[in-house]
Length: 283
Ligand code: AMP
Image 1: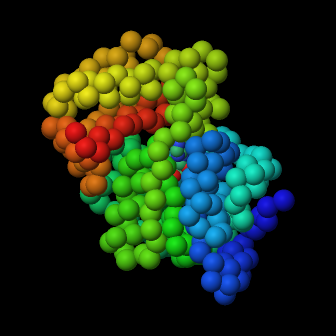
Image 2: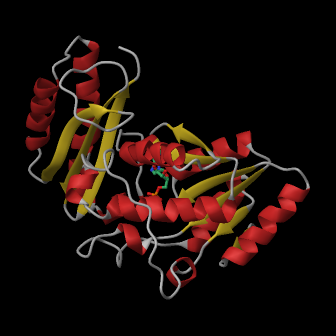
Image 3: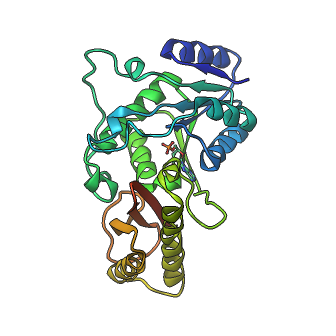
């Protein structure tokens, strides 16, 4: 059985005890309802660090008023099982009141890398993410923290935040884990009914198509975007939020596809807003 704690004080005591023994600590921040994608982050942390903390917190601050906070799936028992089997050492599962006490009024905000992609349709999202992740970094004080490339803009934003604010943690990005048929694993996939689950394949199919076009020499971002959008539009249940091409470091728009380019999409299928992307590291 893995230890599950709900208070900041308990996390601090545990991490302090590990530090006294000279042990290194990895942190995997999550919103729970864990799957193989989360497990790959935990696996990396367990490999790199003596101890691994997994935070399970559905952070109200990163949800807009009309988003899915109330319906977000939760299953702490299953999460604890997955964490234990992956070799994690501690789950931090605070209530919102523990993280945001009465009178809470300090935020970490970012301009620039939060302006494009998800920042456009979710204007308060990254303020919530930056605030909660910096709190988690201050609470756990890990040596390393693990984030998935599935949320590529989030990964870029967190890297920028620790650089700008001199937070002494190494950020490790981990590749996208997919279902056997290609769909990127996500806790939000549970929102999909059978028909929508089939329709959702249009995301990964379009990602693979885009990768192929780039591999075959396409460098014009506008053309890639329009070819990918056309492909998504062949699926009647899919509604595009965005398909865009940006620089992976600063998430600024790019006209030409080259090194370090992020090609990202958000697409609604039914109630679920799904993300997928690919990165061209070296052309
Ligand atoms: P979430 O619980 O959705 O907030 O995700 C927690 C962390 O797991 C984030 O860093 C995500 O990018 C990462 N993650 C979620 N799904 C995947 C996936 N399919 N592959 C890799 N990482 C993932």
